[in-house]
Length: 375
View 1 (tube, one colour):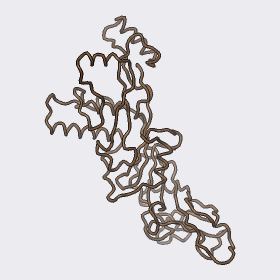
View 2: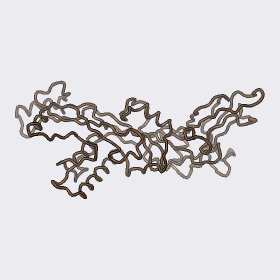
View 3: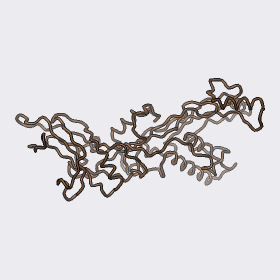
């Protein structure tokens, strides 16, 4: 996949391109870049200043460094994490999450309901109960959500009557049902009872609602999914109009360019194969309105010669070593020297707002050249 990013940076243009031609080719390059990130069109920035859920920010910081490069590859179960806020804005113990942004090809691995538990209100006299039972139901019939026929139990557990903070409930099967049949999504019902299902005198445990509490405490559904995408460079045949001549570079997506005399450029080509910076700046590309983090990243690129004999520092494959020998001894016509290419690639992570202003964390394979070698 990194090869696709580098390919976008060396696009063809006529010797004296018109402004319209340059703009058209830039638009085509950015369209191809969106395809690398699996996005059809750039999502519009949120209509109002909006803060992402702290859970999603913390998850991004756990998985990736400040540049988005994956540092803990085993944290995510799939390659996508989606968050949804409750859309009911009504009853405190009923919740509805609109999942229209989940793609049909995404496999639901785990679904979690995140509810923020409020501090209990002070009461007079001794407490008769120290625990309560919290149950999560899938609503099957909106007209009778409280009847046994109108609900399906998804999760239930005991909670202490003291304390505050986030409570997480697994509701994977319900979300799989909803993504298969969107019309079956009638929401969730949360109930609180005493031990054994006995009624409580007053609401012993209360959860923050979408209507009455701070943004940071709103009910949230978190999906861990996998869209099946894996690292793979798009072949040159997919870019018939983008044969490399002179570069057309989208803003700061730049490769250092030599402007010195011919001898300087020739000397550069004789430098050994090594890794060089390749900055990808989302603000300069025009994506900063919907990408939360990172603001950009260093993709790196490989440049330099692979002269005979290939040393171990050039990390050659056995095939490259043989090719180098054949080329040096002129044993076969048309055999070139090995090429300087990435031999280790790292994934990056993007935290962004989708078309519905939900916050998504997505991991992309093979986006950063970790090291270079002669192949």
